[in-house]
Amino acid sequence: MEQAPPAGDVGQTILDWLSGILIPDWGALIGLLPILVILGLVGPVLTLLALYWLYHMLTDRRGRVRIAEPEPVAAPIGADGEPIFPTNTPYCARHALIFPATERHCTVDGDVLTVRCPVDESPRAATEELCRGCGTRYQLGASVAPVNVRSGRRPPEGGAAIA
Image (tube, rainbow, N blue to C red):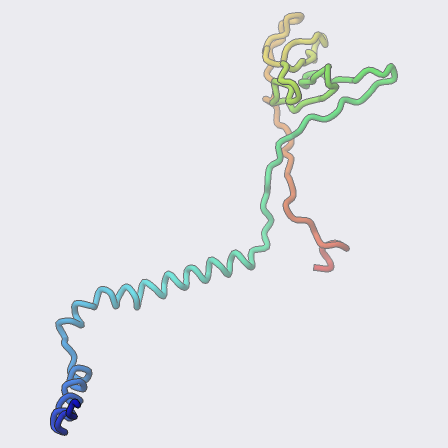
């Protein structure tokens, strides 16, 4: 059997333990100072920035503008049953589609689109910048075209007055 330590040893053990707490090792504490500065100053600042970013993301109600790519539309059909293609606009006669001014090839089969000259209405390939009939030089898509904006959010049923 093990004997209990004498009463003086237990008291000394408690005093040694308390002296380590009450009288710190200042050299070791100074060595921990950079870590304490990082944890005490930089940590809370980063936490506040992250919380503000989260608050901003949750309460931000501004709309986001998403620009939609213009898509080809079906050409209107005339009285004779043939599609009507406007001048100076690329079109695919095979599929009866009118394309945006920036397109040069059909998205269905990849063929070169056709354009009618605005001066003499002769057809030419959309990749050519010069009309062979009248000699007019022009470039498709050079004019200001409206921007198509795609909506990401919709107003609630009944309009914005309900929100």
